[in-house]
Image (cartoon, rainbow, N blue to C red):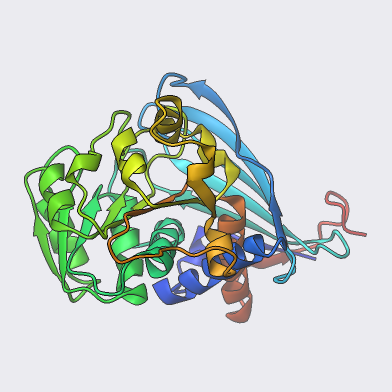
Length: 343
């Protein structure tokens, strides 16, 4: 039997930021210990080939796989980015090959802002928070959120669970955004202040999350204070750039989530200009969590966690959805023996 899970089932469960952080952190740790595998993101762009990955105006189909040895999870994922987003995940038993569940998830149209914080936002937000947890200084004067859409909202909700702070400065990357303040006031006790430009956010913050569609650097290294940590979440493809090469040159520690990050526009620019070299990238976030490398050596260090988004990260969250749906007796079981690989 295969459990079919659709968006109506997912709407009846609740994922907390803490639960998602724990799931993603476990997946990263397994990667750091050599107990996780994934395929790179395979994507065919049908329209918008000159545009950044999943930016408004793109149409694409993607695919990937992930295996988490300790969690006993194997997942095949399909992504469809047209006017809206659809995701199909197959969860397989890694020992028998039987399909346990098929999950359909959806997301709103490009450029729309969500009315709630959903699993996809928490997936990315958890990564930003984990980067901060392991690489930022313990005393955070202020958090800076650059990009006030899905990534910014999910990241602030997860940061609230991972670290302590009292003040948040924000900018959309293009304009001052007061709506972010109104929305996120229900998800954090910190004071949220919308500023007029990105530079102000960078100069006032010592923990920064970037989550925009930018294809040209909007964060300048000369603005970054000593001791700052940056979780770079928005640049996830060759055409995307949020930070300039100087930001990476000034960083004492650069950590990535997967080797795919080496093709990200901003990292490529930093490498091509000689601002950094391959040895400047000390390892993956999983290596930090598994204590194979340190996330920070000195309080005055500038640290960067560059995330492209991984299938092991997605697999951990999808499996959490599956377990919660199953626990509540939701979904629809079907006999799929004539179609799938099950006996």
